[in-house]
Length: 235
Picture 1 (cartoon, rainbow, N blue to C red):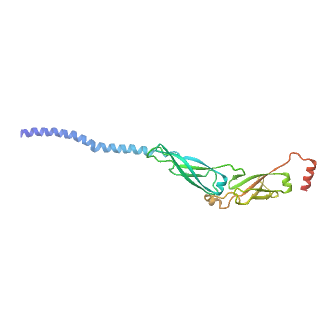
Picture 2: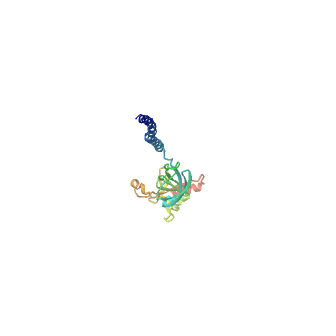
Picture 3: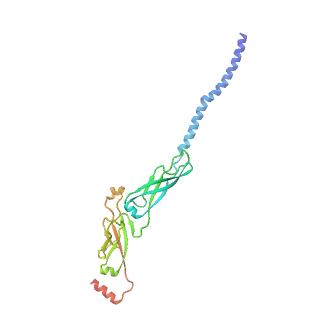
């Protein structure tokens, strides 16, 4: 039994080893999961702070004719995904009556900051190209017409092609000129820009007007005979 006592002491020593092993196993049993939770917390925190990349905006230049009639445009853009550039093509249906400044946003179609990060939004902003004849004011289309004093006196008719070539020209006599806010104009109701579908609730569906702004060139000098003739015509 004395030998057994020695064995007991040896077992006691193994008990100490067991305590030492228990401490190491305890490390696997408790410290590692705590470390995992800590690492999970550390991982989720920066992921939660990962902001969406800034919106990328592109200008989409449109003619006034395209904004009047509507059209379909295809726009190719290059975005960066996971650090590499890639090209995408977006088809945009332009509605009749859209204005400069109209914005179309494609969520999450822009750049990202790297693998596993959210992508930013892609936006197209309508920009109107200048038109040689017409200027858009709200939903009205304005064209400037220059006339001479002779045209006014003789009642010369004026004619301007409409923005939409399928419509008849804008025809009028200079005698139809009216004074509006210090300008001499001839107005054609309902022959301006169409109202886009998203604005019909507030503006109704009636199109704007076509407006001819008449600028009359007054001669700097007149002979006595010319003055007499003009005065006679106005009597």
